[in-house]
Length: 164
Image (cartoon, rainbow, N blue to C red; front, side):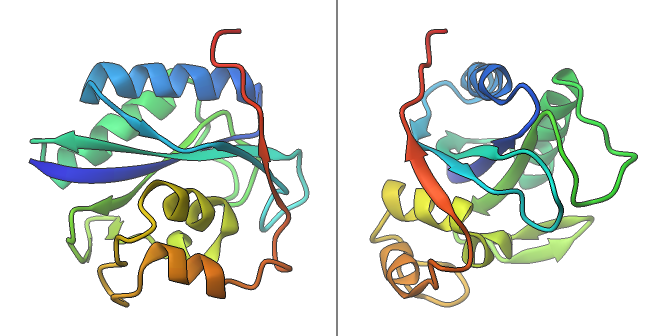
């Protein structure tokens, strides 16, 4: 059984899409470990603010199957892939970690660079698994977050109504 971590982000009808994504992931992976929800500025383009979080789950599925599942869920929520890489989106699901696997093939990068580059991924990881170490650097997510230049990106934890 592999432990996986998935980042979830949306800035189009974000609350609805975040709720739907978590529900869809629960249907695929049963029990989820869920971080707080954070509001962040768009990174790499001018756009509405994003809502972001990270979830953890256990799976027997291969990394390729998990990636396919995430793409199907994004498509279910109207993810448009024809626009620029950095643009507004209904739903963005990224497989961040698959156990301690390190790979970069078939369009799948594990661990994702975004973990250490973006506050909206690193802070939720540090919240969920502070003592776990990044598979490449060997540094704990808590230490990576402590050392992160927090002036680079605005990030705010928010109260999120999961029932609306």
